[in-house]
Length: 202
View: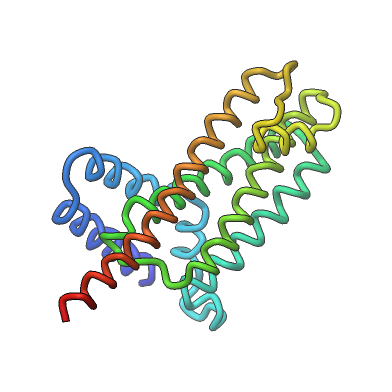
């Protein structure tokens, strides 16, 4: 059964985290790895039928379809805001942050990313998704120019003064996104420097 194989893979990856990482990275890594089962991307991939389409048979291809799909869903929710749809958008965006942190913090455990260009494009889609999620809350709360306020908050130019709690949550999320992006850059430069050092030893 596919679910059993995914569960075994999850356990194997958890064992890798226990073996390689130490200290706070190990604790946070184990916590994020457990949270992965609460993300819709992991659940969807696990519950796909055995005879799923060839494109969905590959995790990377499935990820691309998923990222674009949730971005479109976040945009649709923005235009038809309700508290339940806003909560759904928030759950999806929180899951996106969990997945991104999982990738950046544990890339030395599970190996480097396959394509920096692909990762950058997916990251841009993730950021846009989160921008629309916060804009949904601003719009549901009666904030004028909700999408503009969300974009200004991301750019640290302004924020919605009438909804300080949502604005603070978005600013905190922006700091996490910046940390993820910097982690991505450091991972890329670190990999290149490591390669150059290995070449120098030859």
